[in-house]
Length: 185
Length: 230
Image 1 (cartoon, rainbow over the protein chains, first blue to last red):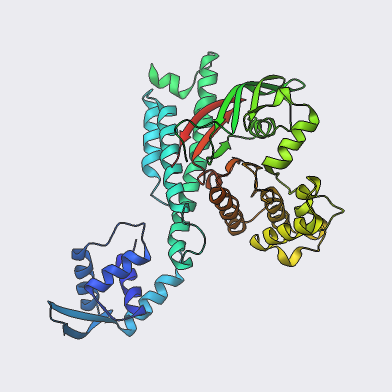
Image 2 (cartoon, each protein chain N blue to C red; image 1 turned 45 degrees about the vertical axis):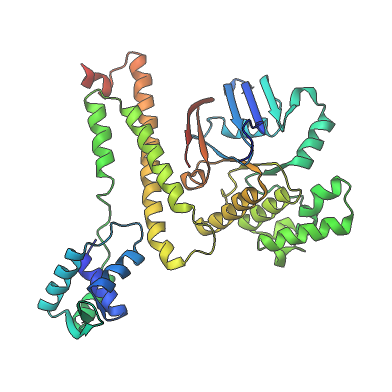
C-alpha cells in the first residue's frame, strides 16, 4: 500500500497529529496490518520535507507535545493524481500460495493436501470477514469487500488447482506421464 | 445449540442415486444438526443438487436411508412426506419456482393455506415476511413481473413463513448480483439462526459457502471433504 498517499489522504480529511493519523488509518483499514508509530512519524517527516504536508500547530494538552500536520496544496494535488491513476493490475498477495503449490507439485510433495488446507484457511477467513450482519458501516465494509473478493479469486484458483491435481493424479493412475509423476522420479 | 446429545435434523446413510447411466451419488452419508448451517459445494455435476433434493424428500434415492426431522422417509407415503415438508421444511430453489397464476402475496401465503390456516391470518403472515424481505411493494405483482432477485426474495419469504425447522436452498443467490445476494443471505441465514432452524445451502459460490458453519464438498458423487468453518 502507498503509505505516504494514504497518510496524505487522512490529512486531507482533517489536520491531525501522528497519533490520530495512526488511529484513522487503522479505522479505515481494520483488516490491514496496523500502521506502526515509527512509520507514521517517518512518513509525516518525509511529507513535510517534500512540501506535501506542513505543521500547523503544536499542541500540549497536559501530555507530550503533539505536532499537528495539514496537507498542502501540493499534497492535495498528489492525492488527486494518486486517485486518478489506476493501481497496477494483478496482486502479489497470492504469490505464496502459488509458490507452495508449484513447489509441492514439482517436488512430488502433497500438493492436494496443501491445496485443501489452504482452501479451508481461505474459507474460514472469508467467513470471519463476511460474518458482520446487516447495517455495518458501508465505508468500513469497502476494504473488507476488497479482501473478500481477493480471497474469492484465490479460492477459485484453488478449486481449479485441486481439480487439475486430481485430474493429473487420475492420469497418473492410468499410466500416463504427469508433471507430478515426473518430478517424483 | 442446546442439549448434549442432539438428534440430527437430516441424516443420510449410504445414499445411491443415478439418472439413466449417470451416477449422481455414490454412498453419501451426511448429518445436519439443529441450528447448523451447512454448505454443500463442488464442481458442476458433482451431485450436490441431487443430494439436496434427496435430503429434502423431493427425490427418493435408489439406495440408502434418509431420515428427515427424525422421520424415516422410506416409511412415509407420498401424502405424509408432503405434509412433513409443508409443515416443517422450507425449500428455496434456484429460480424461485413461484406459482405463476398467484400474486406474490398468495404465493408466500400458500404453504399456510395448504395447511388449512385461515386465509386472512395466512395473508397477514405472508405480508409480514414480504415486508421483511423488502418485497412489500410487489405483493400484488405476479411472478412474471418480478426480477430474478425479487423472485428469490419471495421464495425465501415463502420458505420461512411456516417457521420451518430446516431450510433447503439450492443456489439461492444464483440469479442475483453480489449485493442482492448478500442481502438475501443475511435474511435467510439470519432468520434461520434467529429461529434455531438449520439451513442446507447448495452453492458453487465460495462467498455463499463461507456463511456456513460447515462445508461439505462433493466430487463425482462422493464427499471429498467436510470442514468446520466457524
